[in-house]
Length: 447
Image (cartoon, rainbow, N blue to C red; front, side):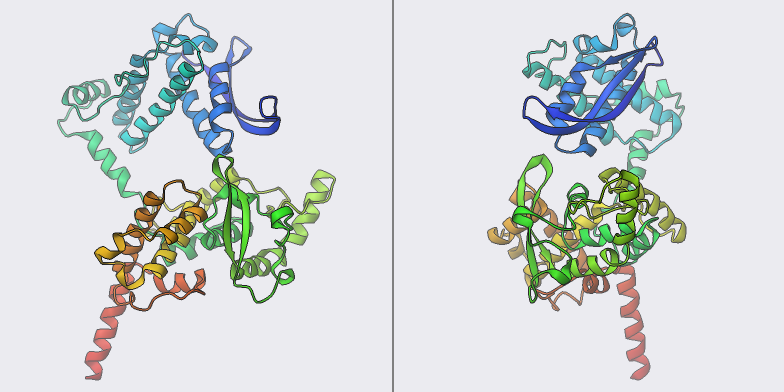
């Protein structure tokens, strides 16, 4: 079964266990024209990933890759894919990691990185940990760490190089990992990259969503659920011109990752931009297309629609951003690899950190957690750890201010908005240095 076919597809149904509609991905193996539901992986995906369809998709694809690898191993030659879980050993998970690294070195590819290989092996290993807790028989020993492939060991590196046919002594794995890291964004997305990405989206709804994420820090899945007209605790949510006047911000209740209920703050200017740039200009025509497509009026719970009248999903946002990033790179080769939609989510907390911590940001005093402020960040972001959230955005804010030295004393006021901040804090350190040099030259000429 060296070419095992596994279909990865989403499913939505009402769970008998919780009496609620759930969505997650499932795996279906195709063997000799028969379709086999992979029960253990599918139960795991139901139990652990139903709170996020994107997480479910990722986990399902990782498990699918592992099962396809197992099908190439002699130990699984006579086993049905539906029974693989009962045969898998720690050794098989380790061998899978090695085979991926061998293939990567052989092809000279930067992907998947050693970190990715390890993280995806953890997903598989955790599935067997869950199976053990659920009383499902498996040969994986959860308490033993011999499923981990240590790619820093010389003996393992020699094995990989030999299998990959590498004839030189250089540590190709470390070189490939280093090259992959260069593509990662370690600081806030720049002004130039923001404007480039926004203008590169194939549909204006994605540009609108990106800007709305900049000022709310909402996740893509949470943005997709934002309504045209709210109800219940959100009954005050509607187009900005119809909302209460003279308010600078509004509270909004959402169901976030892990089905956790939380209350966030949405700035009034964000809702005003939303109405001006999307609700008035695009929404009416898209609402008509929705009705023509589905045979019913678009419900007020749905706001974001594509140009074809399709409700925007998390996957659509990811795919559109990947495409837009490609176009952005073609327009400007300096556009940073690794810029993605989540860069918008990091904008709000970083700017809040700059605003709130202000002139002590570059001192040791900033390391002392302001509990009230940190809790505000945590709630808005939907994180569970105050300390981790605070430290992460403190580091980002420090990097931003250091790249814009000379601006730090001009603290952002409470009425800050993304347009002003993009203009002021979105420049790269190269752009800032160039402006300083120009100013110095001007002063020299004047003198």
